Image 1: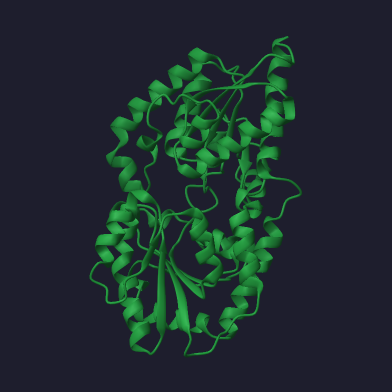
Image 2 (image 1 turned 180 degrees about the vertical axis):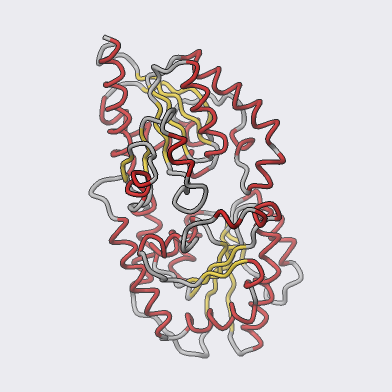
Length: 394
């Protein structure tokens, strides 16, 4: 292999977010080496633009929630076998698995068993710091390095006996839409009681999440209006749950604006007075934009049975990153509209709660800051393992 030969990289990414991270790595590899990068594996539209021909539709592995994984396990196991065999047959210079650990790490294990010479990098640390900590050590035999989005994760992996890891940062910290919304949120705004307030509603990106949360969100809106607040409601969402949301809010007196366009989404984040959300990555988006929030989640039936295995003190990313309670979070039977409405009210005015969150989000941004884009650092780690592997074979 010479410096002019193409790099052959296998990538396995199921979620839209993982597809974006994979595309960032490919672009950074091309920029760093000046070489063609040939892709094999699985991904979405962003990796397809980089030249990937997916083995099958990546949406097939984009399952969420323990119940969904268990119900879909036979089909997932079949796809795991197909994916692993296809990657081994291609003998890539490196395999990069991205997020979706119930699928991607099983592919990694199969590839390592069938061809131990292929270096394996996993991008997005599984939440071993939150539950099932034994997964950290279990990854070590078949994952050479983990690329972490959150600053506390490498130390947690080391504590738990996991693979070596590098904090590469999060692509959100340099996203132009986030930066634009954060700039608008940093400006002085009218917090008078009688003004029209913009409330973001983000009930989740999965149908199960939406169906469990949209009713209490609607009741919270009704309570806020009954308590004298004039509201403009905006629901930024994704196409595959748009229909579920549109149907659920069709009977609301105050019909929300449903937003699919990314540019319009970041504009709404900049305009928002507060947000009521399903716990998830969106909490980090809002924190980096500086939007005060209240977070909720309702577990599916199977997850409720194993919730005793959760070991982390908070499930909200801004709280974990700042290492202190920055924003409130409510789960299952504690998702009560009366409590949610009164918290949101405090975020509408110049209150201590609003100020506490704003200062906390500034700390989150400081801790998430990196000297260069995440994709560049991730590509550097990939190249280091490719070179090490080739050197061993020479």
